[in-house]
Image 1 (tube, rainbow, N blue to C red):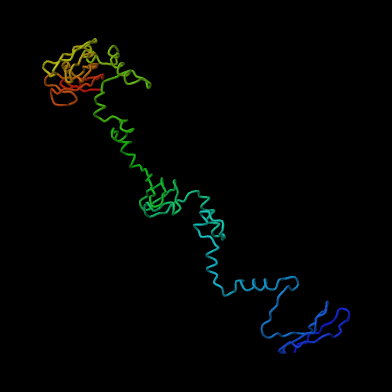
Image 2: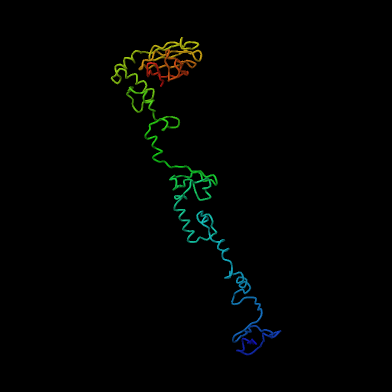
Length: 342
C-alpha cells in the first residue's frame, strides 16, 4: 500500500489527503493551488503507468518515442555498416559525400591519388579491352606482363573498348635497322632514308662537291662541273667529254618507235615538241660512263629509246622509257649496254 500525503504550502507537513494506489478507484480530494504531494520511502508500481506533460522540463512523450526507436544490442548492424561505410571503389573515386571513410579506405584513396594513375606492374597476361575505366585504368596507365616481358600503355580507357599499345622495343627490334643498312628497314613515311647495296653501287666512282644545304638539283649540277677537276679519273673525263653542249628545240619523232626516233647527240637535251603521246627520241650508245640529261617540255609524254640491243633500267632490250611532259631525267650509262635513270 502506498500513501501519498498532500500538504498545503501554508501548513508545514500538515496531513491533507491520503490515497491508496492499489485500490480500484483511488480518489483525491480537490487539489488546492500550491499543494505538494510527498512520497516517502520506496515505491513499487504494478501495471502500466501513463505519464503526460513535462517532468523537470522534459517532454515525457517525446523522450519515450526516442527511447523506443533507439538501436538495441540485438539489432542487425551489418545492414547499417553497409549503408554508411564507403567501399574501396567509392573511396578511390572520391565522388560520394555521404559515406563514412575507415582508416583502410583513407589509405586506399591516398594510394590512388599518390600514384596518379592505376598501373599493373605484375601482370601475367596481356591487357584486354575490358581493362578499362571501370577497372580504374586511365589513358597513360602502364601494364607490364612479367611472363612475356612486354610493356603496354593505355591510349583509350572506354568501357569494354579499351585500347592498349605494346611499347616494348628490344635490341632485337633495332638490330635490323642498325646492322643491315637495307633501305626497307628505315623509312620516313614512304620515303627511304637508306640506300640498298645495289643503289650505292650505282654511285661508285662519282664524286661531287656538295654541302649539306644544297638541293638535289644543285648537287646534280655540281656533278658535271667536276669534270674539269681531278675528282674524276682521266678515262672517265674523256668518256664524259665525248658528249658536250646543249641542244634545244628538239622535236620527237612523230609516231614513235626506236628505228626512226630522233637521235640525241649532246649531253643536255630539251625536247620541245611532242605532238602525240609516244613520239620518240633515242639515246647515244652506252659506254659505261656517259651521262645524258633529257628534259621534256612538250605537251605529251615522250618515249626515250636506247640503241639497238641496249636497255634502260634493266627493262627488256630496246624497250622505251616514258618521259612524262614537263619532267627531266638523268640517264647514266652504267655498262656498255645498260642505262640507269636518276
